[in-house]
Length: 275
Image (cartoon, one colour):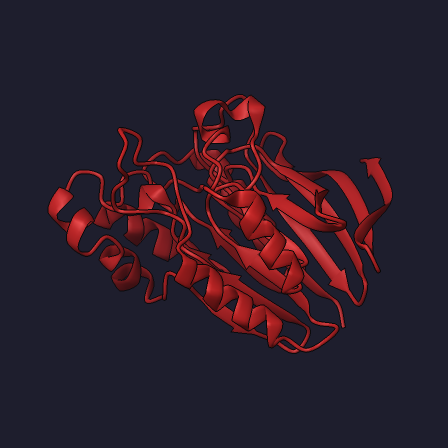
């Protein structure tokens, strides 16, 4: 049974490009997509009205949506709430857990909240994962039965993105060690955001390859030199077909297609072409 995932990130309600958002709505009205996964930064400043706009958008989608927060989703201007209840607006507006787990017949998704209320630095936009978060994810993936596709979603990157400036350097602390443990537990796909540059590729973790789906900004004006985009992954058994969907003026269209096959050494590229 095939399942098609759309991986979105960094919509940034409060800094929306209105024509792009309309094109995004139109795409999901027409496209065959089963699951929409959003890896954070729904809002620009964590304001209630921004969350209300985001909630309205997701209510319009016919697909099941799974959402985790990003660093912009903690209140920026209400510091008391940021420090005491940073994810209350996320929970209340969307009626969702910031660390969702989906156990489906053919896939497992674990979402971890890598955003923090405060960091011991001047840059609070960076992220981290705690030992308890990692342990929960590892247990879920280790308990997953053979043949399921194991997907981890977080907001911050595990790999640097040189073209994205400081955001591209905001790599999760201890990323190599965490990745090794995740791969040992059976992770197949890593979904991230934050950098606003769309990429899908196989990455080496030790002696195995996993799929990195790095989503661009889906609908904001904060493109950092790229164009709005998101990723689509069609999974059927041991084959993945991936596409980057980019805004092309009035509509979204696929730009690159890559296919990967599951092997004893992880996911190997079998075909790639530009459309």
